[in-house]
Image (cartoon, rainbow over all chains, first blue to last red; front, side, top):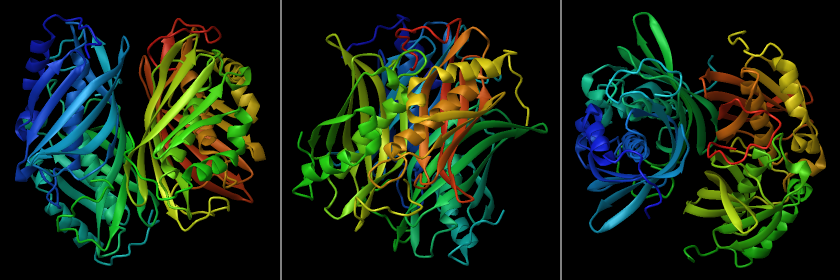
Length: 159
Length: 159
Length: 159
Length: 159
């Protein structure tokens, strides 16, 4: 389903490099498994310190990896000199996030010049099963002419 | 603004005890500062391992503490034998989450028998300033007759 | 994709009868084209009095027919003595709603006992084209033991 | 609460003129009661043909007038040569929309250059009461250099 054509020929390295500079994703042990034009998958192995009071992965973390997957699915289509900010997210929790591993998968639904709409889903995997935990939409902004590494200052256009 | 009357006379201990059993909140160093009937505030100090590639608090984490604040604001109004699950969340990121500390504050907007609507906001504090980073709504389910500590199994009603 | 089994053997008549009692859907000329277990399609022909200032279908109306399609996709799976209320909706507008006809299609994503999650999409059709205008999620509540026809009074659980 | 300064000195006429060119708002009998910088209120009297099967105002219509109020609250802050499109909306239904009149009120939460975040609420009024029916957030895009009257064509940036 190669619907989208990347503007940045080196998009995969650009995306993976940016992800590796997200200390919070490193703290929780998230890995980027797959990047393709307009698509990203992030995987997170179970650890007890990632859970909430019922022993499930914490819901905030479930949406965090969905957010990262969505941000990088969008970023894969951005031009070279640009960076990505989440504008909003809206997610439904369908089932408890319980299992050996979470897999977040996001795809671009619509690519504008500035605003990208993405859907994202998270599945809890383990013992040959995959349970759908989260489904939702994310809006991402493309900040043209901004480096991905520098502190952006306040833009009034998302975070 | 004491609009809500708690059903559980010991609601504050019940809420604080549950929060203390969220390993993920401990991992990131979140603290519950305030609990009142239908209200909760959670504070998170800046640490480099909580940031994303621009040096801001990671957006997923910003929504995570908002989610926890919302869950516990709802839970403060629940009956004793019950537990809380997030059904959905919808948030807007207004400004980058940059500062010495994040403060998430959530209040119940509407309390049903089963479904609670909450609003939540996150502010980045530091140097005498408070910048509004996130605003949004959360829906929480009240699972009657369920203990807060046991593994719930799949309910098909949120996570 | 017959994933869902209806509890009400006469679900199609029940759904179509309820839809025919929505005066607002009649005002705008919406028609229910298809009902299946967990699925509903509603179609709306272009009329100038349904537009906004740019000549497109009004965005509120686009989400209205998506809401009706979602409500009835959920209702198709409900037991006989029950009714449906929208709890929340979250939608993205992907393209202007311009064309001879709108088609809203909704499917149940998750069916709980009380809460149903649905996705819905709206397409603008005409001249052999179909443009994706809206995509989003809707939560519906199943009110057990309530008739679909009577005034429900205030439940504090959605509208 | 005059937090916002309009860019267009004639913003009120500009906004009211645009609203008067929304045939769908005319069809349902909506009136713009109040416009101020970053704020708009729209009122809708009860009519039987605006209801759903329980006799309440149809939920889609409740969100429609909230959408219009949000769009025009944003538009009141836009520069002269520009127009407004809804990017997304996320709303919770708090109580059935039952009463003599609906009042939608929206305010700008954050004004960017291109993207505006708004909150909106709808109240059902009558017999000296005001019941909170809907609360939610809307994102609006400012299309610079586009006339409000012409057909915009497909922008890929909302509708």
